[in-house]
Each structure stands twice: as C-alpha cells, then as structure tokens.
Length: 267
View 1 (cartoon, rainbow, N blue to C red):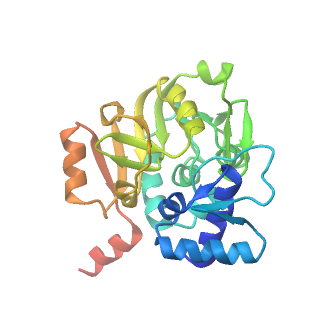
View 2 (tube, rainbow, N blue to C red; view 1 turned 90 degrees about the horizontal axis):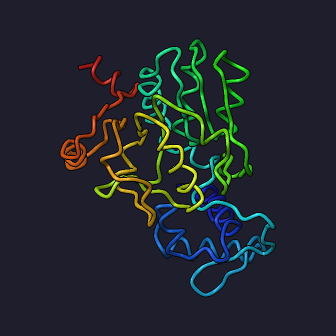
C-alpha cells in the first residue's frame, strides 16, 4: 500500500474509534509497525491527527462514529483484477426472476456491471450498488432504512428494519474482512449485527473473497464455514485453503482473471 493510501486508511480509522492503535493500523494496511509509527508521526506534525501512547486519535472526533475497517475508496484500488473476475462469476449464478441480496463491498459492487440486462429483485445495503442498478438496469432495487456510513458506502441500522426483516432471498452475495477455519470474519460489530440478520433470510450464502482474504483475520466471527454454500475466489488461493473449504463441504469456484487467460493463450 502506497503512503497516500496508508494515510487515508489511518485518518479514516482515527475518525471511527476513540483511539486507533498501532496494532489495528498494521492489520488494516498490511505494513510494519515501524512504518505505521512513522506515518502517525508525520500526520501528527501536519496536524491531521493527534499522536497518543500506542496509537493515534482524531483532532476533531465526529459526532457520528464511523465503522472499523478500510474505506470503500481505498479498498476499490486493491486487487481489482481479481475482484472483477470474482464478481463476473458471481453474477453468472443469478437467474432472472430471483430475489437476491448483495451486501455492500468493493468486490460485490463489481457485480453491477454484469447485471444491467437482468431482471432481478435486489436488496442491497450499498448506496453505490443501489445507485448504479437504478440508473443502469431494470432490476427491482430495495434498500434498508438506517444511517449512511460514507467511508464504507453502506446503510446500517442498529434496529434491523421492517423491510430488511421481511425480504426473502434465494441467494446472498457477501464479501468479508477475512476467511479461515473459524468462518467469515468482519471488523466492526455493527456490520456483523446487520449481516447476521440478512444471512438468516437467504437460502444460499455465496462469499466473494479474493485470495488475500484467506490470510487476513479479524477478531469478530460472522458465521462458520458450515453456513456458506459457495466461495468464489481467484487463482492465488493456497492448497491448504482449498482443502479447508473442501473439508467443510463448501463449493469452490476459482475465477479466471484476464492475466491468467492471456498466459494460457500464449502457452
């Protein structure tokens, strides 16, 4: 992650919690503790945050707290080739007339480009997904009531919501913070609370996770592998992760990226 991107992640993090610890920021950026400490020092000198023992805090904390995790604008620049390929495979699983849930995220967002000519009933908590489908497709679009979290581009409510609690879906497409032997992991309790309700209203849970998510972990478990029907990932998945999914009875779809196609054509 480039310095500019790291600084965006750090500044977003200090706005979302009382103190963003060095450990939190290392996990979010995938960089070293020494690098994060230098970034905090530089941003402190610039007056963009306040350096405190063990981390950093906002100079002017917002009245509305944010969500933990990287902002949408940062995530959409990471592993995009793989995310586009994964989203293409996910959209291919949709059948016209089906009710589906597409959870907010940068990988799930890429599905919209393949749904323009479809006729689906789509429930989504993503502002970006809803807006694109409304303007570029004839799909029916349903969104929940709640608070808009600008950094993550999602709508969440601590109270669930009448519409959300009564929407049945044949399939739910969801991204994640990480995936491992304990299941799907997320970074924020609010996200977990919202997603748990939606998961219970879908027949099939389909996870869109690029291969880097198998080495990314968080402290919050959303659901176990036994709840997942299908995982769609890219060719970078490790053999041990393939075996983990097979043992759990999870269907695995490996999306072929354009780079992989080009190499095969040359061969």
